Image (tube, rainbow, N blue to C red; front, side, top):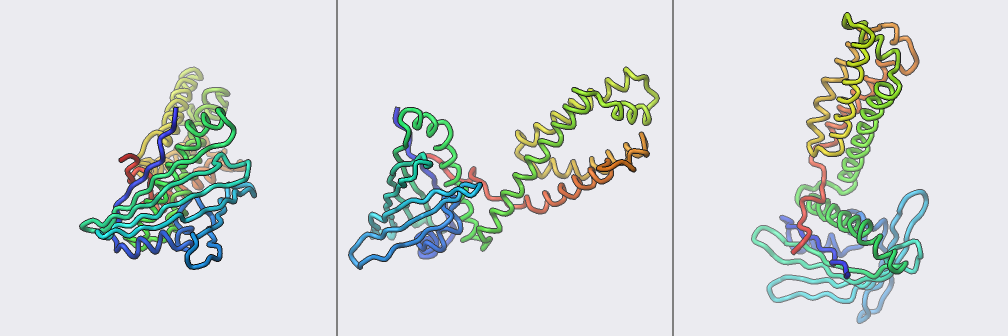
Length: 300
């Protein structure tokens, strides 16, 4: 079964020349396109196709280097433009062997419709095709769409790609952190271990028997796990951050009422909750106007 080509489309409220320059100039292109860390045009004669080299850093000191060739550009009478591309890499670490695609620029009433379609052959036979269909191709489509939204915001609002990506990745690092913190503290000390300090602090706040306190601790653990899962499933992360800005001071106060002696322990609830409170505030600050792949059309 042949995979569908990757298609991404967005509308940009900007001048055609600005959209063209920011996408065709390699020094500008590499700033907003998440798929490339660097793009270098190679010397060419006037009538030759433009060749270039690209590099993509994939982390942990590894990178993928490849080649590209601008097959041609076309400027139509209606001022629409097309740029065709042939690309590939010889590195075995890359799932992509070779591919082709195009960028299309169509004038609209208030700007430019900018869209791309590309497809590629993969390595590693049937296994490579399965991995590409399930994992790699969706990632490539997502990265293309996210890059297009960053590009759009850059040209429309002047919001630099670097600042957008800092906000984007900071936002998701904070999201993953709070998912882990809530699920871990709900599951391990409350449900799996039923830590004695959890029980004693509950009894310090309310006149309860040991069994009653344990039931409340278990219920609190379930609530914390559910709240942690919401960090992955719920789209409005800013609402969750606002809840935490209120919750962490209340948790610190309840701990003080339940057992004030724990505030003398290393890594105690005061310093822990204060850290999470500050991270919640930082999350609110960086989560404004974050680029998203969802803003782009992914099919014709």
